[in-house]
Image (cartoon, rainbow, N blue to C red):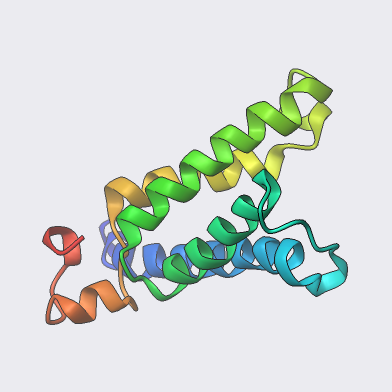
Length: 134
């Protein structure tokens, strides 16, 4: 297992990039109708969610201000789960909230773990771990 631990920072970076990319697509759906989505009123809760998803997803994907962006996006997903999914059923499988819960906890993990490899945060820290930067 120690052999795999060597790749922890790179695996964290890939997880961050993929999660951020997937998340920003949800914002693009809401704000621009991308990927078959429907646009929402910008001055609404769904509009605010779209802004958080697009900007937060982009920041997480590139690894800039990762801990702050992850904190905000994790909170947004927690609110979204309880406002939009729980009224439709108690469990994520019943209320179609699996992706919301996964995003929430992936982003919560990034708050504590940081950006990992391949991040602007790491570049700003001069190539060392960016734990003290963000």
